Length: 278
Ligand SMILES: CC(C)(COP(=O)(O)OP(=O)(O)OC[C@H]1O[C@@H](n2cnc3c(N)ncnc32)[C@H](O)[C@@H]1OP(=O)(O)O)[C@@H](O)C(=O)NCCC(=O)NCCS
Image (tube, rainbow, N blue to C red; front, side, top):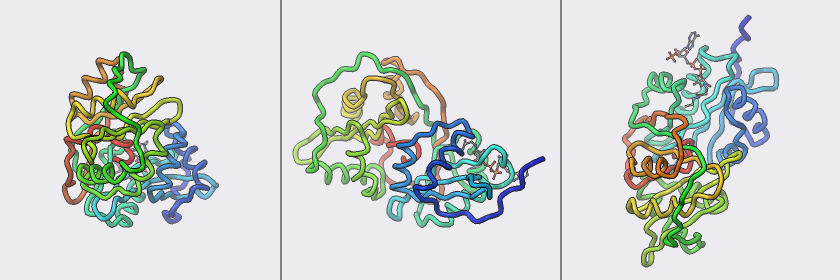
């Protein structure tokens, strides 16, 4: 017999709920992603519904960047409750409690029909490339970030993302294992990072004035070992880089937006911090 659908409220979760979030993720075949969840708890609003037996029936995270845009992520419903309206309830709660002009997310095939029904538009595709990168050329173009670079990092991020992501940006140097910039006179021509998630490194963010700078950053922030790059298809030059360095496509998601069209300049947003954050 089906478990009765939990009818309790959607509540704001705290870091003490992290183990239950991870059990829910594992229930859907996702990894525990401890560092990613902790980072999302530090910058976003994590919501969930209790199942009444000490576990979570579902979660959703909204990470607002000022009043401009919020990134929606970790939309998860326990398998035993799927297709009974909880995903829709969680999404509507996050949307009603997020006061930004636009929302963005990347959708799996499970989630896309749900988001379409809620009014999200598909604006592109993103493919995760994974593997051990070979033949990197460290060109000495980039340098490790210093505190004095951060105003320029924030300014470039704001210009390109079209949003004030200061709470996110200020945490990047400590969150990333490697966070480097390309200096250009008093400012910077780009910045890039890579951070550890489970037993692999996620490469991102990479934001740069041009493709040459972006590829130099990728070359110099990619660490030895297993890496993953989440590449928006509007950047074929990064797909070519991934294939030339021995990475393989693992899965593809749909990039979606809701509300006002996003401002900013996606052509210079080469890699997101994470799909969960844009
Ligand atoms: C995506 C996910 C969160 C959806 O959660 P959910 O609770 O099943 O979502 P809902 O029940 O609100 O909606 C799902 C479908 O069930 C249908 N549905 C909702 N209530 C229903 C009911 N009482 N009876 C029958 N169908 C129902 C909806 O119409 C919807 O149909 P559609 O997908 O064909 O449009 C869930 O499948 C999941 O966790 N998947 C794995 C993780 C994942 O991929 N997350 C998305 C990341 S972007």
